[in-house]
Amino acid sequence: MVKDPDRWFIKGICRRVAADDPALPEALDLRGMGLTDAHVRALAEALKTNTRVTTLDLRGNKGITDTG
Image 1 (cartoon, one colour):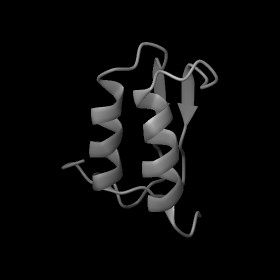
Image 2 (cartoon, helix red, strand yellow):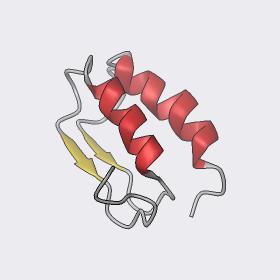
Image 3 (tube, helix red, strand yellow):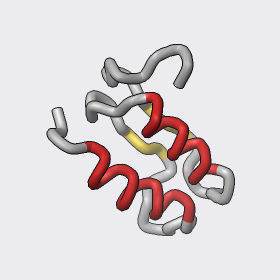
């Protein structure tokens, strides 16, 4: 498990998703990364401007609840 998902996720992945980075794969595999509902909310916001990502795998993130 990643020790500090806030640092790399919010500042890295979400920024790249929002920018529609062509280097990102169409399928993002974020399994078991220690993500939480807050991360999912940030990702959902970033996806609003993304046209490349078509699939997300968020399995194994125990911090994601039905709320996220």
